[in-house]
Every structure is written in structure tokens, then in C-alpha cells.
Length: 619
Ligand code: AGP
Image (cartoon, rainbow, N blue to C red; front, side):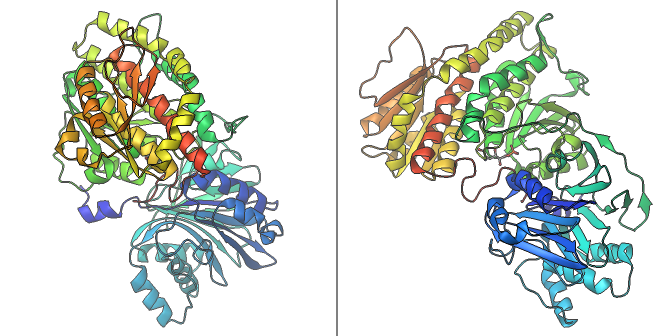
């Protein structure tokens, strides 16, 4: 079992890296790959190539677009190079701190954190090395440069890596080596790709997919030497090892905005299709069953489930708690990954640990998975990216099949995650005889209708556009729900704050009187989720309590023949009707749109909100 300190060090990563060793000029291809890696960070970007026996470096603050506009990049020559997108941890996000970092002889791109950089820097300054940036990465450059004075390439890398504490994925080029890129991994993901007379290095297969579908993943402690015509792998002692080449399932998926203004708008509208895909993948219509093949554990080996994720994925876990408790007799726990990984957990053999993540690369979620694996637990991943680290390292994988999601604000992946978790709870409920086959079949029947209902609910557009202005103008807003609607209230508030930069708080409606009611003042917008479920009457009472204190209530309910009995509701949106389990899917739609239109009105960068990254690969 790893010590707490080792766990803390494990998987801390920042940014995305790419390397290409080819016969053709590489800067344009590196630039394209950096665009793909932008989901990992977009504070700054840079490229280094070798040409005429020199290392050339071009770096820009901000998005990859800025780097592309830099006239020096257009002129960059060289058939071997490395590139980087950064999400700042050490030092300001400016062009000096942007990667690559280079000495005269060596250039390095780095994901991760070097924890002993201050000590190493002191040692290197003593040896006469001059530092230009505030980053920890620069010590790697100078350490390799120093070690190269006495060692060959492989030994200098081995020696350097042994001196580094912390986590890293590295791409390295050398002034005197026109056919060689070194890659090294400890804690942060790294893959090698194979092409015709050229080979590649990348933070993930997504960045490499436009060039190859043949991939080898490095494990912790390994490094590699990439030549144009072959790649050699080494363990941490510098001993050569053989590694498998994996063939990825499909070639690159073409994914663009089409006629939409933003990826987020497209991803919201795609939800009926992505839900349909998920349902088709798992539901066996002829046998009225849910296919979860090769599930490695018997139902009597599991008596509880712990669901773990971050952000929207955490909300999916919270949502699933309600279904698991309703449909199975399992004990259910839900945890935020960044909390779980440092707590004194009581690991139990009969618990199924479920890790929910769109990207499958979220550092905290991966660390929580790693911890469970170290303790011999049963682990299952619910992910979108099936080549991701979380998918590869989990005991069992349930893909959500919703296709690439580009918008930083998760939309279709959220519905995809809750769809899979709902089906998993149904299937486990049936396995354990917690629900009858008849109830199971009826629920499947309703589930198959869900994509159509989502499609209809997506039509409630105009009203939300108008309403969104009020949320932008207010000091803050609240999103309230009970039971199945509570996780959706949290998700609605998260969407609004990450896109519109206005304060929004999700709360259980029944908790308002225990404190937050004090926040309500004349004109404050409050979203109340009150579908016609078991909690309906209670939630309507809570709604009246906030109306009485001056709140402008946007009520979101489902269509019904019964009128809502309440006065002074500011606005009402009615989603389609279905069984209680499935209403959360429909309630999510207007909330996604509310956040989208608020940000649109403000003119914010909807697909890339400030300070955020699509995949949070830093702790
Ligand atoms: C969602 O809108 C967020 N941008 C964020 O909370 C995200 O869901 C979270 O970082 C987890 O990401 P993952 O699903 O890729 O693990």
C-alpha cells in the first residue's frame, strides 16, 4: 500500500505535450496537435524544433491561436520538434514561463510538478546554470545539460529522472541529435505513436489520432527514445524493455461545430442522439435486458457501491445515489475525488468503487482510483474516452458512448453518465432481485422513449433566452430541488457559474430555512425544480417560502393536467412527462440552455470559460 506522501505525489499533471520525429517539416502538424490538446490547458503554448543544428523556440501567451498568429511559427523549420499547451501551476501564465524550456543543448516540455525544484535549482545555479523562467521545469533542462557533460543520452536521462521528485511526462530534444526525441513518464500520462517513417509522442491518444491509430502507453518509471524508424523503451534503471503496440478502435472522429455558433450549443442539441446511442449500446430489445457483458463480479460479492467523481461527474454520482437506493438494496456512498483521496477510507472488499469521468484523465479521480487499486478494491469506470488512463486502469469499464465533447462545460457527457449509471442501477437491482422483472421491463420501455422526450424538451428555447438576462443582472441566484431534482439543481448552478461568471448556488429546497433563506431579497432569481414526483408538494411549499420573501421564481416542472397551485410565480417552464426516475434528464435541458444563453448575452467565451480546462489533469 502506498504511503499518503506517495499518493499525494501520484498523478499531478498539467497541460499537454506533443513530439514529432519525421522526414517532413513538423511545426504545422505540431500546431494542429496542440489545438487538440488545448482541452488540457490554454494559458500559453509553444513549439521547439531543431534546424541547422540549433534549437528554435517560439512561445505565446494565451490560446494556441495566438501561437499560430505568431509570424515566427509560420517560418519555423525542422523535421523534429516538441510542443506544449500550459495550464499554469508554477509561475505566471506568460510567454517566458510557457514551454518548451531550453538551454543551448536541450529543450524540454513537461506535464507535472517537480517537488524538489528549489533544491535542484540551487545546485545548478552553483554550477553556473542561468535560469530564465519561474517554472520548476527549467531545472530538468539544466540537469540534463549538466549530466550530458559526462554521460551518454540514455544514462543522462536515467540519472536526471532519478534526481527528480514529483510527477512528470516529458518530451525532450537535443541540439546534437537530429533523429531523437526522448519521452519519460512518472505519474502523468504519455503515449508513443507510430507512423510511416515518422514517430510521435503525446499526452494522450486523442492528440495522436489524426496521425496514427498505433499506440504504446508508457508506464510509470519508463522512458523511451523515439527515432524516425523505430522506438526503444527503457525501465527506470535504463534497461531495454519490450512494449506492446495497441491498435486503437477507430481512426480519428471528425468533430466540428457544423452550423452551430459554439460546440456547447451543438452538444446540447445532440443529446437525443447520444442518449439513443447509449441506449442502443446497452439495451437488448429482443430479450428486454441490459447487456453488461463480462462484469467481473457476482452480485453476492457486492453489498455497497461508492461513486466518485469531480464537478459535473460528481453530480452524476449524486444523481445515481438516488437511483441505486431506489432500485437496489446496496448501501450507497458518494464522494468528491479530491476529498476521497486524502481521507482515511475504510476499504471494504464487498464495495464496488465506481469512477465517473468524461475525460478519464482527471487527476483527482485517477488518484482515487489508484488508491482503490493499491488496496485491492473492485473498480469500475464510467467514462467517455475509452483510451483514457481511468478506463485503462479500472477493473471494468462502462463507456458512455456520447462522442467527443469539446465545450468545457459538460452537457451531453452529463446525460451520458447518468444514463449509464441509471442502467447499472437497474441491472444490479434485477441481478439481486431487488426489483421485479416486470418493473425492470416497464422501466426499460420508458427509457427507450427518453431520447424523443429530450428532443421535445429541447424546443423550449425562446422563453429561456429572455429569462437568461435576469440571471446575468442579479447579484446571485439559487437553484433548488429535492430528491431526484437536488443533484440537477447543483448541476444547473455549476453550469451558470462556470459560463456566466455570476454567483449561483444549488441547494436542497428543504434546507433553505436552515440558513440560505437569509440571502433571499426582492427580485433575486431562484430556479425551483419541482417535477410531479414524490417530493412535489414539499418543494412547492419551499417555493412559496422564497416567493414570500421577494424571490423571482423560475419554476421548472413537467407537463401535467393539474395546474400548479401557487401565486406569484415569475416564470414557468414545463418539460415533457415520463416516470419519476427519468425526469432528471428532462429537467437538465432548460438549465443547460439558461447557462448557455446567459453567457451568450454577456459575450463570453462559451466553449472555453476563463480559468478552466476541459480536462483537469492537475491536482
Ligand atoms: C463541467 O461542466 C466541468 N467543466 C467540470 O466540473 C468537469 O465535469 C470535471 O472537471 C470532471 O471532469 P471529467 O468528467 O473529465 O472527470
